[in-house]
Length: 465
Image 1: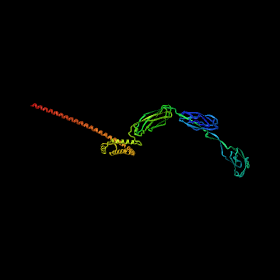
Image 2: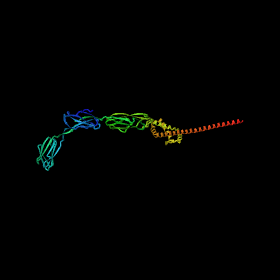
Image 3: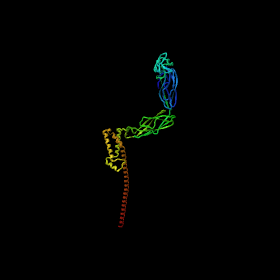
Image 4: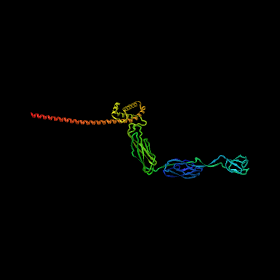
């Protein structure tokens, strides 16, 4: 609140305190008291204040007391604030003038002009325009002015004076007045300050929120989206809805907007996780969001973001640990190739097709580079190898992954071929077994038939005997 300011005019109340709805208008009477003022003030006016209309006051006389109205209109615009207006007026002061010269011409028929008003201290200069001398006479002086010459007379007393041209017989009337005049002037010592404190607000409404999904999963290096529905359940417009968050992961497609009564709107949040190292993955984070407007209760809500496990992160400025993770992963990928030497890998690639543009020399060179980098990390530290590590890992990671996938595909083909070969062998052995079984059965049957035949022959010989 602003304190009362002492001045020539006392204003009551001071300050003026107003609480009002936006879109409404109020009129506040204020009392002006000039009992401490010993002069009259004219053309008084207040300096401007937002949303306030002040009256124009023609005059305030000493010891005068009276009311005037101050009108405050928000006009659907928030005018809340503490303001100061200054009441200023004009008052009369005496103004002294510097001495001046007034010229009067002497002609054939008269003085020109023949009536003149001058101020006390001014000089009247008589200018003879004729071709001959003239004589001027008055109670104050008598003088002769030659042709085309001048004579000056200063008047230091207020009054009426008459000057005659004795030569030609005409007169001049001179009116000498006070050298000071009263004029309106401004003086800040007669100013009075008025405080105006306005608290304006909208009619309250009810704002509700709901997530279409308040729990999302976002993989590092990608972005996710979450959709929020804001619904105005009240009867008044929700003014200047503002969404804030302290998280640098979040951005939104709209902010600072109005919602009509009974309407709703959607806000799309984009989530861009900003992790510093791999240890920050495999976790869930609650991102705090605040929603407020000019005429609703502030609301706090949470958006849960889950970040899946990442073995390593390569940021714009990779750490020593990031690079070690990446090199280790590349080494593990190459180890899956199981290439002890170039010749064995060459034999493998001659037998199977790999879907990347690599020769066995390329893969061998990768393994050699990784071995050299790993050795330098252990002996020279990371500084000298930082650029090489980052460049190598970024350039070759996808290629090595593709090569590993091809190797896995090659391995799968080998296993499938082995399964097919095993199936063929089983079928062949089955037919071999059947063949052997039939062969053995035939031999046994033949042996039995042969034995019976011999037995019959023996029986016949016996009978003959």
